[in-house]
Structures are given as C-alpha cells and as structure tokens.
Image 1 (cartoon, rainbow, N blue to C red):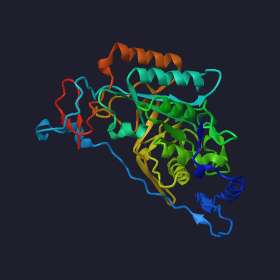
Image 2: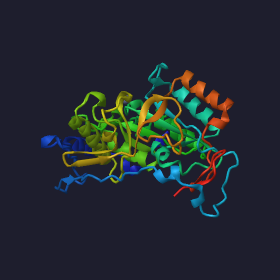
Image 3: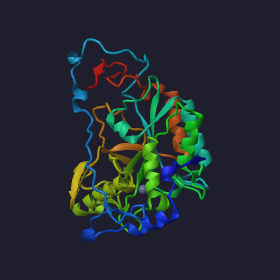
Image 4: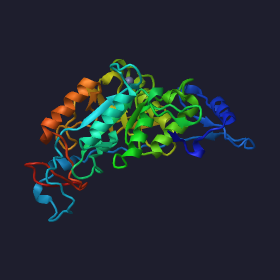
Length: 358
Ligand SMILES: [Zn+2]
C-alpha cells in the first residue's frame, strides 16, 4: 500500500471547487482553469500549453561509417551484448477477474513481473525505446510495460487515499519496493478527454491530476491514446489533428511541466498518412509525438535496426499464452533478444563493428 504524498491529498472542499471550476470554453478549444485552493484568492489561473520537444532517433546512427569512430570508447562493455536484438513491448488493458483477452488478473500480472525479473529483463518506458534505450544496464534485456485506455483498474485510489495494491500501479510499486533493481517504469496511454469527463483519466475524476503527477514523479510515462478512442483510419484530417492535439494538451494540463511524447493509436488503426502522428496543429495547439505504439505485431525490432519505425512499434498483447510463448522462445533463442552493452554511447552487436552513438 502506498500513501500518496501529502501535497497530493486533496481536501473534499477543494475537490468540489476544482471540479466545478473545470470548464470547456468556446470554439471547442480546451482551456483548463483551476480554482485556487486558497479561498481568499479570487483569481482564476489559466494553465498555458507547454510546447513539446520532438525527439527523433538519430538517423546518422544507422549509416554512420565505422571509419568515423573515435579511437577509444569507455569500458562498461558486455561481451554478449546484442543491441540489434528484438524487444518486447507488452500491451495490457484492464486488471481484474476473471482472466480475459483484455483483462489480466492481478496475480497473473505479478507473475509476469516475477518471470521477467528472474529472466534478466529490465523495464523501461516506451519513449526510452524510441530514444535508443540509453539507460539499460549491461547484460540486461529491456522490456516495456504499456497500459492502454486509462481504466481505473490500472490505478485506483482507495477511500483512505492509498493506492489499491491490486491495480497495475500498486503492483508495479510493490514489486519495485521488493526488488529495487527493477525500477518502477511503465507507459500509460491515457484518454485525454476535454468533455464533462475531462478528469476521467483512470476513472476517478477527483484524483486525475494527482494520479498523473504521481506517475510522472515516479518516473513512469504518460502517453496519449487520443481523446475519444475512435479509429483514426476513418477520420478527416481536422478530426485526427483534434484527437492528437487536444489529448496531448489535456494530459499535459494534468501534469504541468510534463511533455507527452508517446502515442498509441486506438485499435492499432492508422490515419491515411503517418505524417499526422509526427506533428500537427489544431486551433492554437500544435503537437509533436516521438513515437507510436502499434496494437500487435509481436516483439519489435531494435531501435538501431535500419527498418525500425518509431511510429509503428510492434507490441505483444499480453495473454498467458502469448507471453509464455515469447518468453519461452527467447529462453531457447537468447541470441535473438536485445542485450544491453551498458554503454549509452555505442551500439554493440555480434558481427557489427562498434558504432558510436552521438
Ligand atoms: Zn484502447
């Protein structure tokens, strides 16, 4: 059980004021206004949009000629490293009973973490994969835990303001406490709504802001799963850009100062041109995304593979059968999985001359 920090514990009166104060202004443009908790203050605070920074995997990395390497590189080298191996990006939805296609039981999710940990995997956020996995220790195998739809079973706060230990966040944090060398990392692709359910992220409107900030402070990632969860494949350009701009804006309002960089298109269905996913504009809101998670496809190729597309990263939908299949496969074929050399400044793989990362 985890107590939310004191500054995240919200008084009931403040909550009511905050909910009342949330308004959607004209022209369909979302403006989040907050009523200050201090009752003797009369001002309304307008939270401005935080421009995002686009992070693009270094193109020159892939084609960099060996002859341009520096003479020496530092030494946290792992002999069996393979940074051109595949990576598992696991796709979860709800937690609960019974086990269903889109619902994993808490016990099974704990067992997933235990098996991954014991097998030498190391959790990173989705955006870290797109960035080239800079922080995976030598010999470790990166794995990404992703959760779509911001269902309450992913992050529930109980009446005593503690985190439900059977939700994804509770399980991840407890596992991290028990295994400090397994960091609390996961990416939550949430729905950024601008309607009456504006603060419906993770199903408890009054906790939405505290939850978003808590996750970011713990080092976990918030990504966009659009506003409405409709398929981008059947939308006009204007609607697509509204979905991608407004959701990013709403999530960033929940966690001020945080930049949303990752996206997960609903149903794995893509718009008619991928350009929409990278950057766009709706009204006063411009957006950029560094990467997008697909809904299926199995293990993804390495971010250093020349065929890697950060806007079409394969994921593995987690069911007991699928996960067991692939974990067993990589136990039997360990040379096919990504193993870090522990050095963020170079790419190491069998048969590959050292490439120094910029
Ligand atoms: Zn979804």
